[in-house]
Length: 357
Ligand code: SF4
Ligand code: SF4
Image (tube, rainbow, N blue to C red; front, side):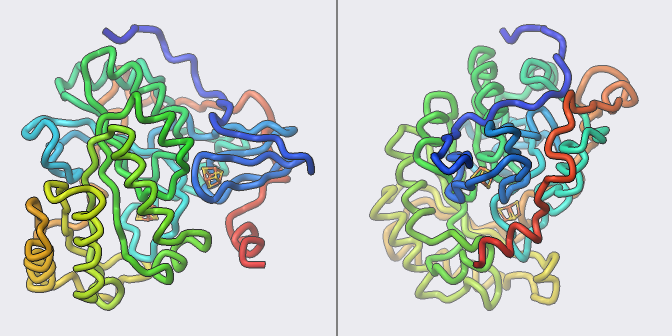
């Protein structure tokens, strides 16, 4: 069983994969941005900061959302079907998808600024408290979702370790722009990966992440399966963006050849959001045509979701709903113990400009 230790409160946590470079910068190896940061700088995800040569995660124990539902909603169909899972997410993502449904609970740039500047009132939940909450609500697993879990891998690993001891499984819902090193750390602890394959065109990926290309994403998915993680994949079809039938068929072919004929593929419906608010939802017939193409390629488990968009869960309950103690106590101000990056922090816009140079 998980320990009942009290929350130690919010504090910065050393980034699990970091490397000091000869030029005085420190590189983060959690995701494939592999950000190289000077003192005071924050990574593209905004969730890691360099303080005097050491990288720290700002979002450890900070939950932006929490919800309980069937594992099928992740979507995952071939692992513990019918079980219920507690989903959690934090602030910080390594992508900037134009159709992101999760802006406030995924990017969370303002929330991360507040954490960096010691002004946050965000709830802090220790791994033990989260596992206890999951057990109390009688779920069978914990899912890390809503943004890219690699950017708070420190928390994902600590929770997963306790979850396993408590008999819970863990699910990692990812864009798979993660390093092999991060996957190797996770593999002994995480049971399931549900990964997006957003497109087979580099151009598509580079619109949402300047450094991403298709081969990196596919390589990470394949690596996860080789490491023994149960893998399922998902493609959210966006009208006019990634709905070319030949390309979708090639995704199915890639899954067939690299993950196997039995590997589940989830085809989900796009709903207008953010910069893509002007686009229509995915027509049902487009999704079923994709389904038929995938079946013809040889994939045996193809699922179409024509009633639901991404799992941003608009009906997420407040974090306090699931945790012990009254809401006021959970949301007391948790100041950073140090001044962190202060005015030296590099905000997203400026950092993105640097990456284009
Ligand atoms: S996790 Fe964040 S800081 Fe680390 S490489 Fe990725 S974007 Fe950069
Ligand atoms: S859709 Fe997912 S990967 Fe893309 S920006 Fe939003 S949270 Fe990040």
